[in-house]
Image 1 (cartoon, helix red, strand yellow):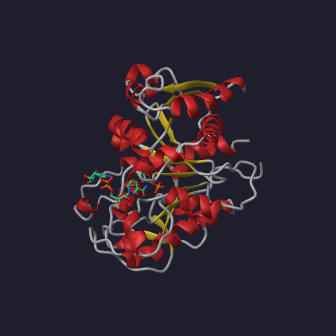
Image 2: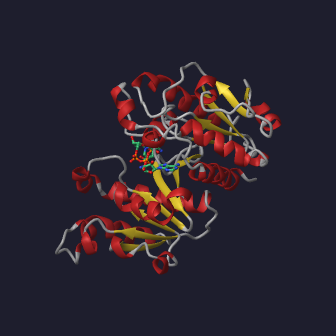
Image 3: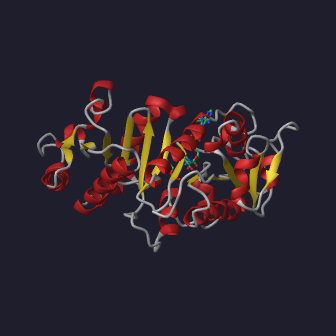
Length: 338
Ligand SMILES: NC(=O)C1=CN([C@@H]2O[C@H](COP(=O)(O)OP(=O)(O)OC[C@H]3O[C@@H](n4cnc5c(N)ncnc54)[C@H](O)[C@@H]3O)[C@@H](O)[C@H]2O)C=CC1
Ligand SMILES: NCC(=O)COP(=O)(O)O
């Protein structure tokens, strides 16, 4: 392992018309006394100064090696070209700056100048209108890392985590009507393997216990309410158990997330976006973190979106971004510890 931990975290700008700039400042104010969480924002300085206060300066840096030294006194900004945005007024004109911020953060991680990418929220539809062809960060990061020669690189899997709950998704940003045909043995197997590997490598759980959600109500009720459990999911679970993994068969998702149930596993494999995200965001919306598993870089994000409705009002909470920064450091420490 050539990479040593305790490089700064690379924070992307997100949509500048959303709450990203505001929660970035608030997170910096709360974390400036914690050098291990030192981060630099990759953004046009004007996107930050618009929401800054006079007693809180930014520090323009050109090298991430300078971040730790200034982090206690100023918000470090790695500048890129771009304009300020009006809070609450998203505009596809910012798409190029938004994606360049993400690309730069990934490059810095791949070159080991940063320990992790932490992303501020983007609004997918605003980027789509500018021609962005990826459903979200997760798929875009997968593409930016494609072809990278790394020992750990099974591909992007979305995980949402809050408190003791960690949920990985077999399908992500697709229409609900497309979910059943996308749930193939290969998809379930690959996602389960990535999730088991990440629970062990990135979360420090040596022998993780994985609970698997069914797709249908009551996990199909023995085939009466759908056959995906019997035909696709359970055979994969049996194969994984035969390899020595602790994996359940498909279980009814509606009874899998209450407090007692959560004591019985370390992670959940969920079949589709809302099945997995609703429990996490209900349990702890402001403490939830989105983690991309299976990449050669560490990436986390707040669980929430751009919240255009409250951008510029001064009321956005930085808690989930702070949790994402902490989780990024935690994962990087697990992954890169000698
Ligand atoms: N990681 C990412 O980039 C994510 C991006 N999104 C994008 O965000 C956009 C808006 O999505 P929504 O479904 O409206 O979800 P949202 O999370 O932006 O907002 C949902 C509700 O929570 C509130 N809220 C969100 N974050 C908050 C915070 N930090 N403090 C206080 N209140 C907060 C909002 O005001 C709103 O009432 C969409 O275009 C979506 O694509 C959504 C989730 C994650
Ligand atoms: N609902 C989670 C979400 O949309 C975040 O997606 P991504 O941009 O992290 O891929």
